[in-house]
Image (cartoon, rainbow, N blue to C red; front, side, top):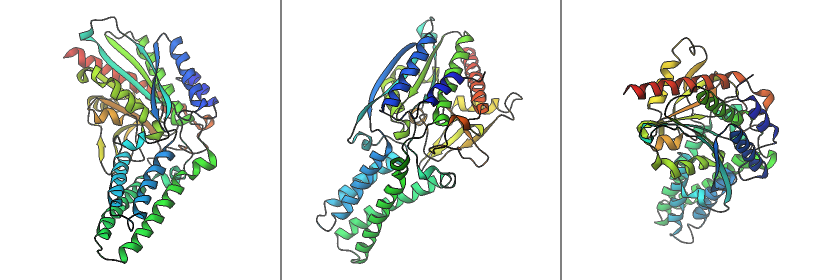
Length: 390
């Protein structure tokens, strides 16, 4: 039987698992039941979030365009343009941006299962296995042809936002008129078009089923937890964290990290993030980011890279980079908490089917899931052995 096949099937049986939707709530209920049956202490942690990234895109573009349109009326509008550019820069470089708190907010839940060690508190090591269970809106920007250009498209938009703010500032001081006015109108049209292209897939097609992205990651996290529990590893606190609102901007994971990071000893904590394991070869992520690079220079990533050079993993896994959006693991990197990010990429470095209507169970290859579970277990055991040797 393939690792996590039951929960993979049950999650994929739902039409979708959109954040703060009835289907997302049903997925959370299924996960709580599954964890309870496995003997975990289970809790659901609520947090506030928009339902989809479309809300955030409309606020960012709407605020920017409104500021540009008001330039002839008041110079104060320049500050408006700069403010929304700064929030866009942070959001699309995977930093916390206050734009995620703009209306309309909904309540979503992270589902957490915990198995605590009976050992002395000072001797315990903590392992967190994290995966998001929500599904994404269908997006034209994630089609096979567009996926490779996603980062370039984002960079162009961000630099044009910076250009718009800079030229608007010059226009207020009556510099280079009327040419700057014509450019401003052109930029307004470009930003409106980008907002339409980036969100029309959702309005026409709704949500994806999300079998690969990310029912596979949930299945891998839960199967890895089963393996580690059966291994009876000493002084190990094991926690499975299944987040929502990852597709909105990793908001659920941000809420979890901010709520709990002060409880963790970084030197005694290891995190593994499982995301989109349904097609391609298992990949150890070494770098993500848009304009700002996010590098995974940490112990679990180094251990994983060493392990895939062994006979057990040499033909089954690889090292790679992912610059099309990011993972829940970004908040652990930002807080210098050791984290290993695992996904599956094809020969072109892409994730087949993601954010598309064909992300369904029939298109899931179980091999990357099995490899992720094997590698996750091996990394944890190697890490614990190193911890005990210190």
